[in-house]
Length: 98
Image (cartoon, rainbow, N blue to C red; front, top):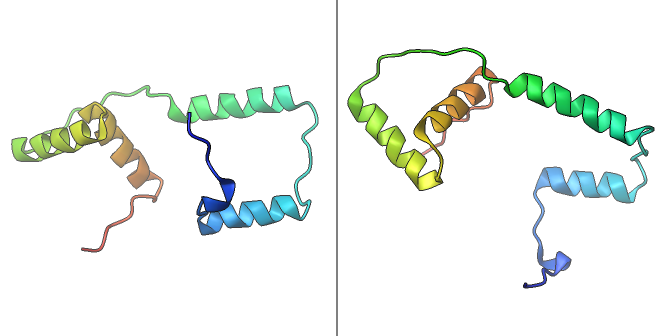
């Protein structure tokens, strides 16, 4: 296994801010860590539970393009479609400039 030199890792702005806060001692330990992890795991599970089915009509050309992209990502096409719609619903789907 190859060792990674931490000094060669490039951090993005968010990661740099996290590192700075940590190094300045701005983080506090959580009391009863196991209970907190369990609580937030329940939140995450509730947010990602898929409990509804949706049927939509789409052009076969669009579905085929989605299948190709999903194959390139190594995921099922319905998972890709669900992910895109989820990001759109949260306002996190970003249009790429060409």
